[in-house]
Length: 333
Image 1: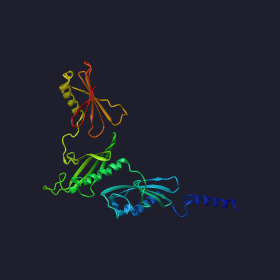
Image 2: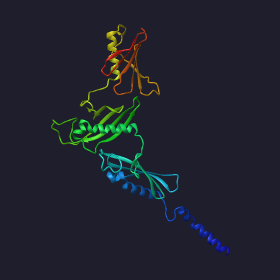
Image 3: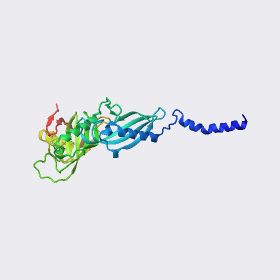
Image 4: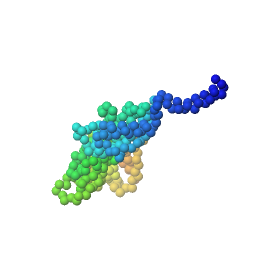
């Protein structure tokens, strides 16, 4: 073979080398991210959870990430169902509420090898993954069920409108969860309105519910209605630290002559003295005219306060507790 012919053959081989590289390991098929996304969406539409009550207009592509294996990607999708739960729920009692889901689909060489919704449900096997619920999720579910059966929503709540809009974990012991839920009713007002004449007006409500130790401790709708006790919410249901100080001053003036210089209208300097890193406890110091009043309490719903009082000049000291009713228990020996 001539040198010229050898050169031509070499050029031809170099020209087809990139094509051979693209098809290496996958003859006749090109795997791309776009094709993976298309396959993931196709699978989602046929998955048990989405097929039952998924809303097509809510399907949303979130992202795609490569896996370690070649031609393999994780595709994350989001969609909304009309009811709670997973899979085919034909024979189940379901909670009617718009429920947002996130599905992660693993695709390798064009085939779906794994699909999990909300880290809970295996869409391929149709089984719940045996994972414990987070305490926050349990609190949210408790609140949703509690509100559905409470007087206001039970009277004329509109199915499918209830949704969690915010959740906060308080740094307290035991932990407290503040869950904010929005929902709609067919009429204005609160509680059982069976004996009232009501306007036909769809009314939006927002409930702030506090959960602790697996129980609803407080539930206030629109900042106006105490759903737990079925009454209008008072100006303040909690005894604040400032009022605790006033109660203590009045008590000491009535019972101790050493406290006759202690006045309600003293101009107190107020300092937050809770040590950094101390969780679940609040300590506030009130100082003025050589008096020092320290109010401490656990960060819980309706706490009992511990109060310590000192007078620098006379050496007077006093200690006691005050509950939410304003009752005082002396601890001074």
